[in-house]
Image (tube, rainbow, N blue to C red; front, top):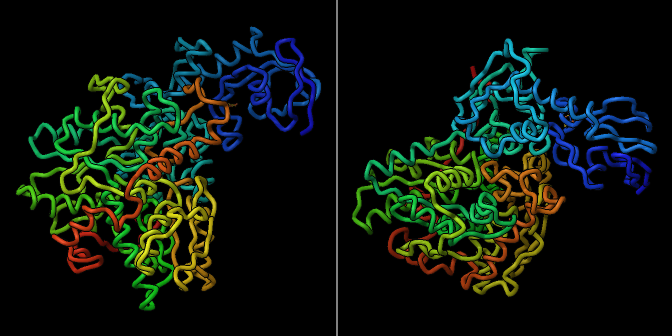
Length: 591
Ligand code: FES
């Protein structure tokens, strides 16, 4: 690390020369406002000019954008000089002059970075009034919407789509005053190969990109008198607490259950039951393919973002996808069949709500293939963020809630294997625990398969020897990594039997519907929070796995009962009818 000497506000410091002025100032204890700069240079377009400071020496003369200017020997930086303060305020006023300021109607209110910098810089008046750019409101896609009247053209969404998936769905369209961020030709997300993962939403500093809220739909269902049953995915409990001031990585399962009950849900279930069911079906499907010469490698199908990507880009590889529905869809189908029968309730009087870390699940539940006899498995999907909004709106003081338990009747048990579905590598590990048992008749001594664990994007691989059967596995999250494995299959060079692919980098814990991780709003978190929040959330799930008495899906007593009383056996005709699905190739740019 090469050190350079700089001055900030007249005081001398030594800083790492690889840092930008913005980053160097932070290490010296100064927070310069910023918007377009995000996550260690993931986006550094230098376009918003909110980070201007006055500087001389080290190649600078006058006002510089601190997010792109390198910390150079001899720099003399002034953050609080009248000129610097005025320049930053003007930059924010210019952004506001082209902004739809309907803050009270905006779901981003309270988490809006533009409002935050406006407050810090003192940009309170409408300094520049006049014509505004034409607005595009794209509400056609089921999971996310785009409102260009709130876009500040920072480019963070463009960078994230490309970094996570190599996709480049979003880009700058038009020129000058007419510039907007949009899919090609300003198409709707619905008419582009967008996979609906919501990663762009998770980095947008304003309300320009948001999940499409289904809170009203849930409210209507509760008011209608239907039996509204809620089920929450594992990753939700690992992050919901962040919305209520808990440190990142604090599991809040008990309080979340208590809150959902107080919101008026008739039953509160864990999607983990569905995850155990998925493992039973998927594990047996894998064994069948290995033993009977089926299509290999088999690829997991729990992530609708990934399924979307496959349908758009790898239509020829669709037979590799497991035919299993994802856990919440399986559980929805079981609620409207087995559960309904056991409780003598007409399935059409049941409304199933899934709380998911994922925006693409909103799309998934609307797929034609996710119905049984014309009845949808799941009726509404809300994200972790939407659940937090519902809790706040209802006046519930989350932190003071008691810890409560999931409803137990017939689908309340779950294994540790199910909990780790929320982490990249978790589905693989859960499946291996059951596949090992089916092939050997005994439990894997260690229970854990450390080789497949991780919390970031990128590819991990392992070879597991199970009683002489070597199972080669690989894990990828984010489509950029997945593409490498998929191209190997296409080229006939894949050595794997089983591949886990998750749409979002790091898996569901980093889903597009999870709480925003913004250091400016998290004063009690360490500076490196953007580097380790995924690890912290993952730990919350692994620790729950460790605490479970039952660690394997096949040992969940209520799953055993479900097969005995209703489904007969994994992959039975009945199981296929309710729990399996199909895929079809999609056109990237239909018209
Ligand atoms: Fe530096 Fe936008 S944060 S120009």
